[in-house]
Image (cartoon, rainbow, N blue to C red; front, side):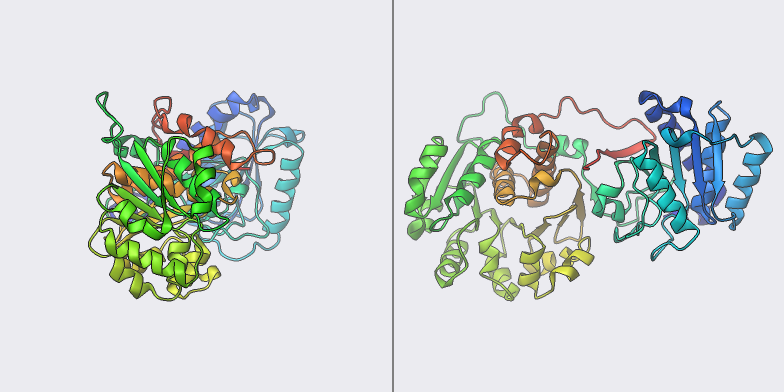
Length: 490
């Protein structure tokens, strides 16, 4: 995209100036709110265009009266970086940075073109910045924290930032390694994206536009009837969590089709739910349900596989296939494809489940998380939601969506079951699979963010916050030049 903009006669240095001016605005505004501007700014620069961004940000901050110091860790080497360094020296004086440890540090040493671990003197500077961060400095990374691979998120020696400012697009690596990036802001710098074939980062505006409306005249039938086939012996909790996720997402009626030993527990926890028994799963669904979720806690023995096959053959409407309903097709994606074809369908694997289904290792799945769903979605003629950090959703037509909301409070058993119930609710309310997946995953993540911590909190606390998470009235659209913003997860 950057190269295309330059080829269309936009000077590369003009893009750098726009990026710097917009970044300086965000830095000044954010740090003014924190009361840090009086302590001054130290900018660490490297040799390439990321260093040029740093020099341009330093100039933008200095000309509005802030105390600015630049530490040129490696001498500017690209034409744009040299030009921005000279422009800074032509109008600004470098101030003494003694005592700036409690102020603001801008990391502009290595950017998106960097690969591998940084070497001295950059590595030494990374350690120095992290030491200042530990002493209270507020660290801002331009595009990516130095040492963090922009594609993979790998970085053993990388800057720990409080705020990362992405230029033009959200970099994949910062979505994978959110803990090193702090708050994330994506800024427009004038790059055209219409033909870039990039995944779409889901935000509140997308969710607001794609959640099915529940009118004032709604009744329990019009809000959708969802059947959940889940919970083998000793696994009733999976069925209960899926049903609770559905009920807290606006479904009108939910029927939990489960092992008979779980029925009492379901009624005790969820008096709103209807129940059915696994041996008659197909009969409990066909002619009643608007959508089906199948899989949580079913087990993956021959009996479970036979049950899943029976349901998929009998029920030809919208379906979410999760957990053990995927595990029973380990290494046999063709068999699953033949059963899913011809209806709105969605699978919701975590990386290990997707790896087993496709015959690929977990590390392979993780390394290719943004792209691996494309072939699988086409093979299955179904939408693929790959759970993780971030969640990546792929449609059979090749369209991809990324959901980067949530915190580690979701890294607990049952979280995926609740998400499955949320997605299936939207399917029952006539959402397309990809929209149901994107909206439910975003709200699921937001509910986690509304949970004030990780230790001391359980999945039930996240479910308790779903009501607030589904309410989007208080979320304002980003103000230009901000394209997207994500809160820190650390």
